[in-house]
Length: 489
Ligand SMILES: [Fe+2]
Ligand SMILES: [Fe+2]
Image (cartoon, protein in one colour):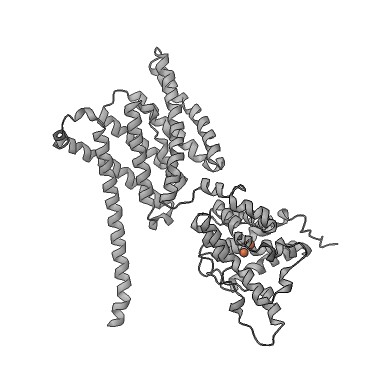
């Protein structure tokens, strides 16, 4: 009886948690929709001469209709998000990110529409935030749904006097958003992205000009001004995006492509120190970064994240740079140390990396990968060296990294590529592509046999893809080192 209860309890807890989660999501959709419904209806301030005007049945019916419209948009976006990205189903940040992006965009679009004109409404903002913080596909659908919903709400509240202007503003925002979202990865930095925004803004500004040309050719000033406001709408959206993105990156602890790109900059203080104080480790980290980027891309993980993690995985070697072979120029301080001391110096770089990453307030994932990149593997060189001094079997754990084993596919990639890169000096003498493949395969298999990939969800298929990627790319990266002999010779 006791056993039955103890088995049932966790299941009940799971069901309870699931119910609470669903209730939280429903309440979020209702709360956000009602809030936006009220904001939209209140924005036509002329209708409210006294507090009592707000509490009439007619006003609340309009608020209800507007809220249902927003709830439909938010729910559709939510379901589309988990349809294209099933991993977001359990992500508690999904609905808050969608909600905050839509609230900010609607509120600012209302303010600019009321105080300037409808063309300058920064409707592109929501799609940019969603595309960066969640997924580009979701960002593209966000632009279609939010632009349409905003203008329907705008017509309901303010009337449809300037329908052509409203239609021109919708299509301009949607086209601009699509071009900007599709060019996000190419830009690489926030500065370049602003340049792309200016070009997109100039091109899309032609749309309202042409639409006005078709409907009212007599008012040239109006025609040109609509183009100018449309251009400013794109620039304003991108400017607001630059302001809100870091805030949302911080609030939701999300590493965006831009943040990762900036962390990869060789001007970043830790990397600069690494280049100056431990040049060997610096070169190793850059090489690991290039390989990890390709491997991550090949198995569908974030290439930018893999690259950043690789750049910072060994920063702890800064503390005792000369104790690591890649930084030594002739003299090896381990020659004067007993193996037990040597191994503790080597192993300590893992914790030192985590400390330096935390001190520099870098994303937590970098510290996680640094902590896990050697897993629980032994430092064989010093284990074998220590064994030569005694006939007793040594405790392998004392010569092993403390772990944990890689907890993510990115950490597993860094572990593999780190080993392969460090061993690349040995592949110089391999005489054929088959031998080279066998060498890479052996390195990966050793880690797998040692149980290092048990906790990170990486599959055999992923490992094979990583092996293929390394076999294809390494000869071109190290063409000076790897020279296959012609087997017929
Ligand atoms: Fe390391
Ligand atoms: Fe390394």
